[in-house]
Image (tube, rainbow, N blue to C red):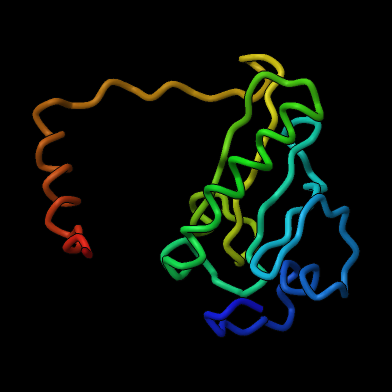
Length: 148
């Protein structure tokens, strides 16, 4: 467990994987994270980076853990590109069931990419430019002050 003292949650598949109670094909682990192969991959080599501690969504994860995950994703993504001979990868992170989060334990997908059309991404519809400033303002007024 990390120093943030989050507890494992009984019944959470990722907590059980982190504890070694459910088998996984691991590619990396340290005191804060495990990375293991996704059993329903979008592409060959798709894996997950999962904090050992249980945090339901991104907004629950302490900044101290988040500060470590992107450098780790960079290193593991580079290892995937080299090891699999691919030219790129996507980082994907879902928050909440409506956003496609299937396991209620925050995690990041690293998805190796071999060609542009491998994973279908639907282009968005053009924005209503008369409404866009108001949508932006609804977000902007809720942004917390920046910490020094």
